[in-house]
Image 1 (cartoon, rainbow, N blue to C red):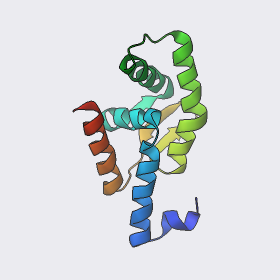
Image 2: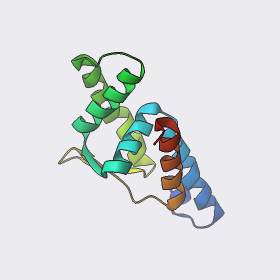
Image 3: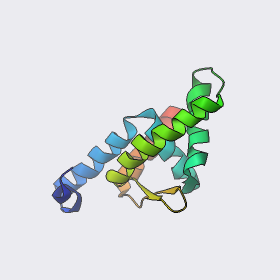
Length: 122
């Protein structure tokens, strides 16, 4: 991503905010992470792995086994957390292994909130 896009003002900046929100929501695991952080503000990565694997496997009618949860943890840690940090949707603290929703612009938060309402019915 072009650093100038992240810091520019005006319509292009607004468009980047919206593009990044949709990029975050393109993947179900990232959506679930954002939904949980919207409600709880902060979470440990291990807690997010529990929640995301639970939501994913129960939605498919399966029982979450420890290896599924461990695989989810690794996917979040190595793929989805870095992507959400890169686009500015979450903050990750390496020392505490915790995440929080970044203070993202209103359009991005609104997109995540609406996606959550549509997908979860809440």
